[in-house]
Length: 79
Image 1 (tube, helix red, strand yellow):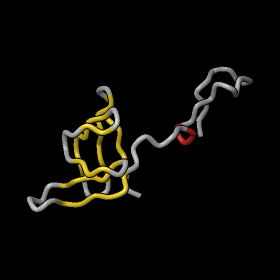
Image 2 (tube, rainbow, N blue to C red; image 1 turned 180 degrees about the horizontal axis):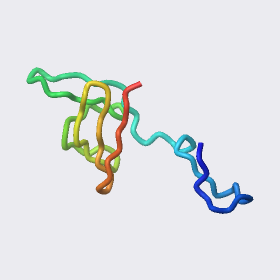
Image 3 (cartoon, rainbow, N blue to C red; image 1 turned 90 degrees about the horizontal axis):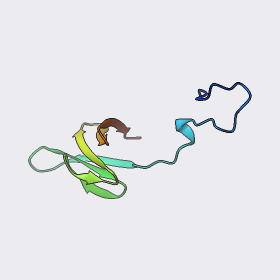
Image 4 (tube, helix red, strand yellow; image 1 turned 60 degrees about the vertical axis):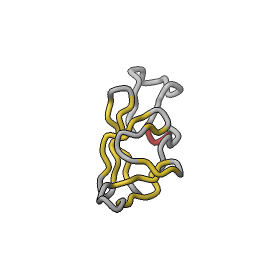
């Protein structure tokens, strides 16, 4: 964990990524008959360029999905 505040005595405003709720839960990755990867995110089967809970899927690989969230890339890994 890393502190995100400048004050050494103000712990109330600390935010750690591990404390944030999981927004996208990746539970599986498979291939369709054409060989394209599909991801099961938040219980729904999705492909590249599809929208999922505030993000667009940019790529799907064997063990991770790259999402575009407001112009920033976020990688979600399969556990």
